[in-house]
Length: 295
Image (cartoon, rainbow, N blue to C red; front, side):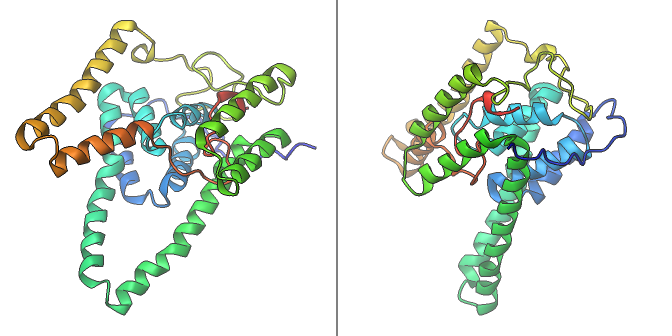
């Protein structure tokens, strides 16, 4: 017996005709101040705001983008925000979304770090920080259920999620092995039982979701999102320069063995190799990254 479909609580009113850059700027700034709960909470907030409340992007397109962002090393929530910002308002939209996603939280982190270091021995301050733990745990659990209930459409997907959870937390199976196993199951499942492993959510035409959005299931990719070799070359060159210039300046100014240079090199490797901790029971966050797992 399949798991019941999550209730559709989306609005039945027409979607917005457009979302201006100013509106997007205000939203990404707001998100930077309210996105508590780590990746699980941040993704859940973006889903509620962008899919349900503002209806800037359809649920299927949102989950499709999330799947691919979570295939990448690094912070998938920020990658998702950057992608949606870029999809809506080109390069500056992506820069604003990605920057405002972390800038307010960075300022808050600096302030809280100072308070913790200066007053951590004060009972009231220590109790305040300790009391945050269960609240954040509740946010993560609620967010995991919110996103997972939309991605896990049948018992097969629930089984993959549960197996991934057990493998990573109980058996300490490496992430790459879980990814490979999930991809293999998705590949074979798409051939043996295609109804259970439907693809969907790309930029081409698909079956319309029940509630239309500004970027809908069948909305064609904008011109700047269409693949071009020349555009790919420009992005690669720009990305390499954005890394090479500061690393080169650090090396030339302080030497390779200096703390700042080594920090830059360490976080370069971390950005390319690390995979975030998973959200329990959600295939997208247990490194089940194939879009065949989103119905």
